[in-house]
Length: 194
Image (cartoon, rainbow, N blue to C red; front, side, top):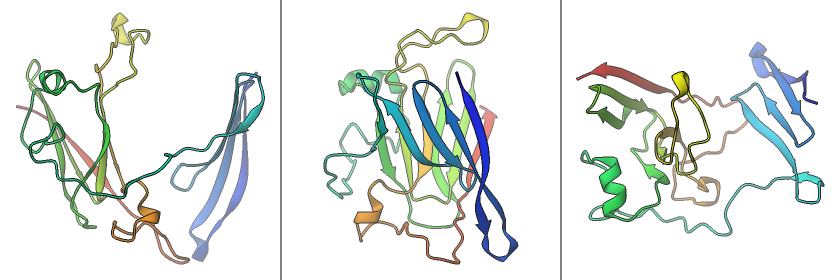
């Protein structure tokens, strides 16, 4: 059984509106999401024994380093054919944050070109980073329109964001929001044909 409940979570200051909480619950999981930034505030899933418990997302230890990409598999500053690039560097795929300009002004993030169709995607953002993910866990079981099958690396995500672990790294772009401050970042997706 699946249920969705909707409640008032709180009010934004200065008449900024109401923040609502949505709780999605099934036999396998429970997740709480607030409407302010679509933020997941709680996530519980059942373990192998069927016991529901909180999920802690994170890493054993983060280095807090910003590594140069020049001469590495992560140097995507010039166009590469992604499939060949993954093979050449023997990569299982990307699921990494790339550091961009630390500016709240609109700046270039990424450009993707599909030679077969001529489609172009350009991404601009005010965020300092972008998580690049290459569908590493797609395995052909998902079916798309007209029966399309999606094997490993048949899709990608460009997720603009702050740098991971920025809260614990004083030399990273700041992420703390103080009372009275407003979180405001924008990402633009520009589609065209070359």
